[in-house]
Image (cartoon, rainbow, N blue to C red; front, side, top):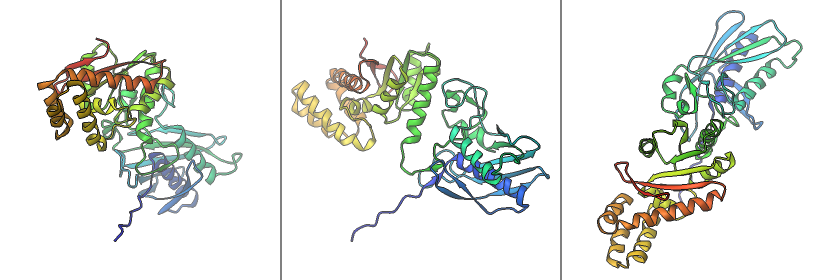
Length: 362
């Protein structure tokens, strides 16, 4: 029997959640009725029907509503977080003022879409909020001044598990979303974080960045280069080629890869994305290189049969440690093929205690 594929469910961004909370607050102020759901328009033009979690009228001019963010089948750190807005109407010329409340960060460093000193509410969410206001008050000549204060009760706590402190966003999370819709299984959010990190590095006029694949390799890399500011260190996950594309676009002169042996083997194959699913293929290729370089078929078979890349690494360090340099040189060459001639690439392979076993600049 053919298995039916389950369709993955889309969700909505923190920006869409904030816009929906604004719509709920405006409805209770204008209609004096608490809505169960509101309809807003995503940046793409699609309609989103979003359930209101709580809504209350503070006084005749202000109301407060919240939404529970739903990321669909692509959950992130803000999935199920409460996102809210306090909306205040006052006499004025129709101005729409958007502010950061509790749990929403403030930008403190250059290089992001929002300049320093501004609330960390990206252009997409700002546009959705403005659309909501103009939907309720279409005539700008008679529209009151509208002040929107976006808040996230657990935002400061959530932000500790993001790269916001590194990017110079303090006091809470960012309100994000380029479209308003979260598409499941998308890599866009991770790539956007890499690009934002590199943008900050460029704005700080850094000539060199250190690319690592996770928190542990980054921590070791920071120990190797203690004089570099934290903004120089960028976690790229599995995005080998995409990170170099972003380095090149930002005009950063140099990129150092500082990675563990397992990732280095995958990078050495020239694959653009070093996902764990490629591990078996990586060991097979490593075994072929082992046979070619050492001429030892028994050793190559042992590498091919290794349980993990770390197991293979232990075998190599015991019998043929020169293999590490071979992998490092191939990794560095693959990176240079992706980066092009304008980026100076350096490759470093770490052992599992954080020592540099290979350095292409040594």
